[in-house]
Length: 593
Image (cartoon, rainbow, N blue to C red; front, side, top):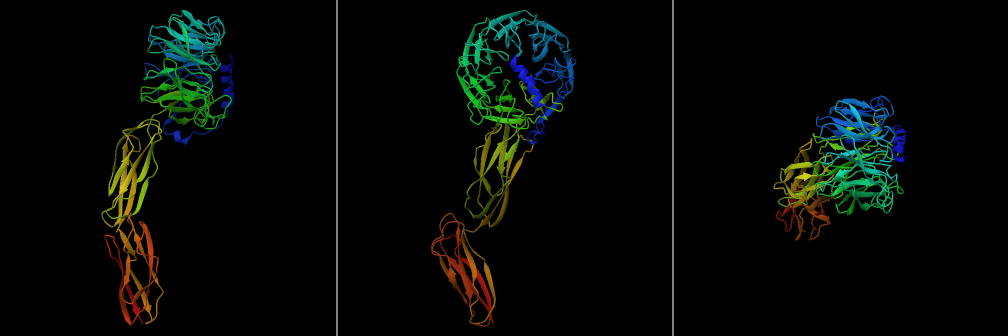
C-alpha cells in the first residue's frame, strides 16, 4: 500500500525539523502530551471524547512491541494511559476509533491480523481487545478509514484496496463480527481507493469519497444505500480538488462539506503540479462548490475531514503549509465559514507538533482537541488542545483631533476592531465621554473570528482649550474593556497669534525689525471681508493676507515699531472679518529712547 508507507517515511523527514512555538498562539494552544514511542508513536487518527469525559485514540506505531501501535486514553488534564499495544497478530497500525451505543470502542487496523491486510476490532474502556474480523483481500484490505455506526446498529466502513477488482470496498459488519461486502470499486467510473470513513446522512444513505478514479481519475464523491446501490455524485477534475483523503460531514444546512488533499485553483500554491488542496461544499443532489483553495501560506494538503462546531462554523487541519519551520510547513488548524472565509487559527512549529492528519473534535468544554502525527518533544507526535477564545486587536489606541473650531463638528476619525482570536467575540457595548460622539458604527452584537468592524468618532468642543475623553469597548475578550484615548483642542473660529508683542527699546524716529503675526482660519468655510488696521507707533510692513482666507489655512502680517517720542508706546493690531469672533486683536508695546 503506497500512501501509508509515504506517511511513515515522512516521519523521518519531519522529526528532524527544528522549531520554536509561535507566540501568537501561546495563549490558546496547549500541548497536552508528547509521545515518546514506548507509549505510542505517530497518532495519525484524531481523538474521540467518550461518555466518561476522557479522550480515546490510537497511535500507528510504538507501544510495547515498538512497531504495531496502541490504543490509549488521556484525561482532559493530560494524563495518558496505554490501554492496548498491538502485536501484529491482533492488528497493526490502528486508526480511528468510535464509541458504539453499547459503550465499547470499535476501530480498524490498517495491517496485521490473520492475513496481514488489517482487522476490525472491539476494545472495552478497560482495554480488553477482541478481533472481530481479519480481511483476506477478497473482502478488502487496508481499512484505513475506520468505522461509522449506523441507525441500524451495524458498522459501515471502507477498505483502501482489495475486493473484486482490487481498488477497495465498502462493507458492513455487525457488532458480533459478521462482515458483508456491499460494493467493490472498479477503479474507473465509480472511483478507486476510498481512504476515509462513511457518514450516514439524514436521508438514511451513506456518503463517502475515493482518492482516485472517476471521470478524470482525481477521485469521486459517492452515495451508497444500506443495500449496496452506489451512485457517483461528483468526479473531481483537479481544479476543484484531487485525492479526497477525508470523509464528509453533513452540515446543519443539509449540505455536505469536505476537503481534498491536492488540487485546487490557487496560483500561489507552492506545489502547482500536485496542488495544495481545497475545501468544498456539495448539495445532496451532487452540485459542488469550491469554498477555498489553499495556497501554502494558509495551509496545504488537508487530509482529515472537518467538523462543524457549536458556532456553526467549520474547523479542520492541514498536514503542511503555513509556517516553514518544517520542510513544506508543519501544518495548521483553520476555521472556515459556509461562505468560504478562512482563518488560520494555529500554525504548527514542530516543537508543538507537526502534520496533523486526524480530525479535530470539539469537546464538552467547548474547546478543540486533536493530534499531530509527528513533532513534539520526541518527534513521535502530540495531543493538543486549542482553546476557543476571542481576542481584540484595535487599529489605534489613541485619536488626536488637533485644533477644532468651537461649536463645530470635526471630521470623523475611525478605529478598526478585529477579532484576532479563535472564537466569536460578543460585543456588549461601546461608549464615549468628553465632548466626543460616536458618529458611525459597523460593529454588531457578534464579531466572528478574523472579522473586523469600525467605529467612527467626532469632536465638537464647547469651550476653548484642551479636551480629553475615551472610547470604550466592552466585550467578552479577556482584556475587556479596551480603551482608546481621545483628545483635541477647542479654538475660536479665527485666531490672531501671538495675542501680544513687546518690541523693547527703539531709538525715536528709527524703525525696528518686524515681528510676525499669524491669522488662522479654523473654520470649514473661507474667511471673507478681511481688513487689517494698526494704531499707535506701529505699522504693517508686509503681509500675505488678502481680503479672503481659505478654510483651514493661515496668513501672516509683519509689523514694525517706529517710536515718535520717548517712553512707553502702545498700540493695537486689529483684524476685522466675517467670523463670529471678529475682530481679532493683538496688543502691542514698545519703548522710545
